[in-house]
Image (cartoon, rainbow, N blue to C red):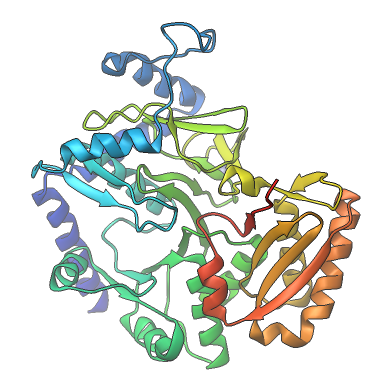
Length: 418
Ligand SMILES: [Zn+2]
């Protein structure tokens, strides 16, 4: 009976998309075809790229910055200006950022463009035997709920839960009772949720997949979550402007998944072009996140291009010892990940550097007694891996305080005044 009800709700969601003119299935088939042409994966994109004359943009490796053919990057400010001109249009869909990353950005899409973004999502989900429109348990931060949101959530077959503060236990039990087919939400909140489940010995229903978004998560934390939810726990990387840019395959690579998007990394500046977009021209857009691109032979999902070392803002890429020698900030989160794995304790944290050689580590209060042990461990790990000396200062706070510090895609904030 339950499976029939779930199927009916899935059909309602898909009909809702169709009624809006979003051809998710059709676009999904195109995406699937693109990435399945096994020996010809990248050329498919470039063919598309070159065919798209509207944007007059193709391989421009030889073009110098002084050439008239050189295409200047689109800044966030330029995109906001484009959005301003579109705000009266009633035929467009709007996506907006919550403003956690600075100035809020609004994006306008026509139905074809939105359909493509949703189809990329559908494509990623299917890798884990779920589909867009399956019953979703959304683990989110509290926000104002109105009747419009209620109907939208109903039609899209999802319900939002907030496992924080006084309501944490009640929200967790209602989430489990809702029996979602998959979970989607902020990494730190999913970790909070798991903690409540373990502490209260709650029974977890069968879930097909847990998708962590917007915040970083360590491999050791994912392994821990997999044991609690008994299903794959995966990461997505995306933004309001492009929705999903990379999604984790079953082998753990973050594959680029949108076939209309080209990602360029030049002198550690990341630029993104969406060839499918005409409502807003998003060419060589400076997304502000920093990561490296690597190649893989893995053909499980999307492109052979995978993203690695994602570390939020460019200034957050590096930490410094007292002499100003830099090291990659992933060393810090990796060493904390190692501690978590070795000690089988999983927690949220945030790292801040204000002064050379000194690192502040925010930890939730339940780790108070272990703080000296953690400090010594990380200091020696960093010295061992980088040959540099740093001093760790631990500040114990409430878990929600750690969350407040956490920013998009980064555990680490560097604000040294130089
Ligand atoms: Zn892979």
